[in-house]
Length: 112
Length: 112
Image (cartoon, rainbow over all chains, first blue to last red; front, top):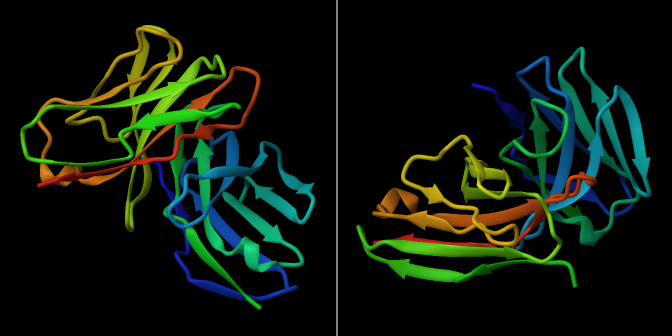
């Protein structure tokens, strides 16, 4: 059974600080990795995708991938109250986005 | 406006009464998928379709059927619903040249 693990939280971070979200996965051969944000009562929306080891930055968001450690993380700089949501880590065991396995999500609360 | 639509948004039914949840996308996407989301279990893939007449099982296909007769539509069929199928269901679509999976608004199903 291929698994994706996340700390369910809740994770509380002061406004303006860096929020760090972590995810581990079981299959060493996994190829593509995604972070989704889901507001309460809403559908998930893609924030970041990452395919290669290292960092990928997009605005205030940075995804970090370490395939040797089977670890992917999401950093949110200058956290805003609007970042309060559940963050879902998703892994595809092949290239692409078709057959995703999701973690259970980490609930993040930004404290004003 | 690019979107994925689902109907109905809310449904309460009884055990054994066949139902269909419709999903439609207007982006000419090849790939479509169904997920269910349950507290503590996260998003789990039920079925996916790579194109018209091409469907495959996800991680939790038991008790569900799908069909893909047209590119834009991907209905989810519960032939004989049971209470353990009470859940929040999401449809999603993805184009061949993008890694952004678009989710529908969700269908909250209660089976009594």
